[in-house]
Length: 498
Image 1 (cartoon, rainbow, N blue to C red):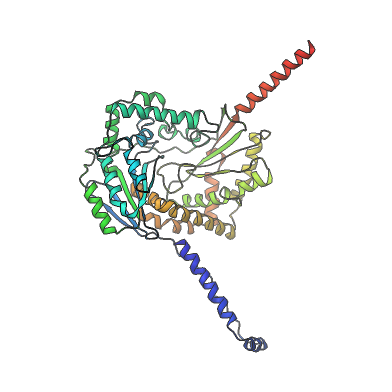
Image 2: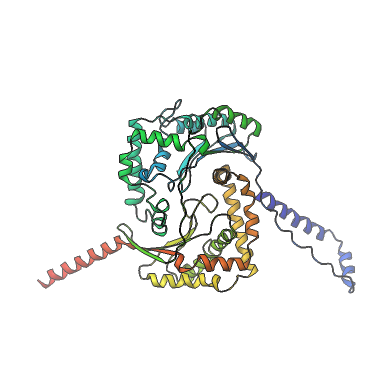
């Protein structure tokens, strides 16, 4: 749709150019001699039409939410299954289970052996992945369009029942623990800042525990624990299925009903925990040492407004103004002017999604690696100076318009990303959280309703220092190297003196 709009704009320019060139030369001269001709006002440039996604939405008798969105651009389909269990809503004594199950779902089911799901997709020229996020665990595959039924059969097979064995459990416990060691514990900046900031910034245990899970909890998991977790959270009435791509909606729905309709729903209603956060009233400052880091890092986070409120939309545009792109105010201040870092990144739900695919409390955060000679006080002085610009006075209409253009560009990219997966991701998330995938077509209207005054009010309330958490990362490797060099120099000096 976005490319179609751009192409239409180019066509208008082309037609205008042809019309001008087609005027005979002598007619142009005669027209110039008329000095009292009435002035014709230029036609206003039309506003771009809001981006919309067509879809069909159904709920099966067993509670499975089904979203079908046809796109015949390419002969491929994306099949995405989202389960309403993420790492912040896992049970307290089962930390890491949400992530563990992301792995367990590839260990075999009734008709597919260990890792055969992956082989099935790869053998048919497709790609696949899965991930664990704050509020969901998802699985998706992108395959040639004629393999849609095969993928629906395979996804239904593992939703119906996993091959839960002692061998598979022990194997994946080891895999998850090794992943934590490789990706976090033995990796410089491994958990910075995405894993650490929520633990420092939030008060509610569900939002502040280690999302990878306590290794003792993973070790203590029994076969019955795993079976109970699967029965409770991997039921059709706790899931959404999104299909995007080149297919006939009626035929696709018939396939879904054929393979998923007879999967029983969870017998008891699924009760999710209270994940609300109290209003933060005092700034939090934290520091940690990364033994492998060679340069220090700095991260900050602010709690954002509740989803779908006017202030939440305003925060989305504030994010564009302050943090997104080389023209953002923080990039200009920290990179171009102060020169203490080569880049700053972040956003709402940074590194784990976007501002549209989560439910519940969330942080707006930024982070960067910086020069060793820069203090935390100097960094905060720069950040506060930038943020105060939004708090002290309303932004200009031009600044607001620019932020909206940037947001719209990012939004279109998200919706169209990865052969339909971006669209499937947002449709499935909105069905799962709000029972309303049609919200996807309302976001742009919410952004367009934001005013300069609302930007200022939102900045004053949510970008106050008492709503902020900062995390200073100490470069342990650099300190160790400096100590080793100092010790070597001292030894050399003692030898010379001797």
